[in-house]
Image 1 (cartoon, rainbow, N blue to C red):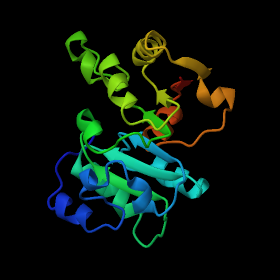
Image 2: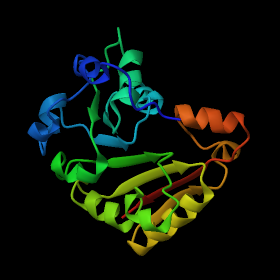
Image 3: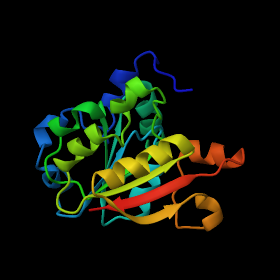
Image 4: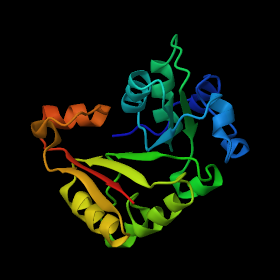
Length: 208
């Protein structure tokens, strides 16, 4: 369960060199922040940062940005980054429902890792693969639309497949058991726990 309240978390994360405290200022010009024209890949709901940190280390010629809603969660990521220097990584404490306020036609890939399934029908629009969110993403992708989703939730996965295809995305890669299929993969902290418990991990890569 995510801890949402750690005393002084907001102040602590603002001291990290990886945190962008004023993301609106860079809308449409994140390449100036990174100092290059490399692709920018975005993880929405980065949790404690295992995935985005490892990806940035593995792929130095790609810029990575992680977004997380809760101060206390993103704080864990900044603590892992203490005494490190990763030039192609930045983090933002932000709510994804307002993502168009901080990006404009500059994202190459979106990662949706173990997003909240919001199982009740009345909460459908909160799912990060809902039609409402897919429309938001239209405004932040640079050219090709490219999304990679991982989840342990079968119902969210099935919902997402329909949502993607209804929105004219084409399925590029799909797995009903990612670790058994031995597809190249960088794990999140949640994923490690789910796999240790024997749960299958569902993955789909789509583009349009």
